[in-house]
Image (cartoon, rainbow, N blue to C red):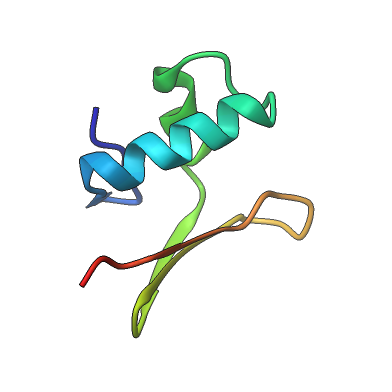
Length: 68
């Protein structure tokens, strides 16, 4: 499953990493719940990093390195 966050489709590898982490953190029970959880997040690409920022300071920020 490729996650879509604010209209940006993430790769299968990145999606899998995010899904596993959010299920581990108990914020989602299933992969489909992850997209709902991330619906208000913003995606920032800076250099070799992709960051998913939460809509509030209490959210979980996720940073991933881009593959070269």
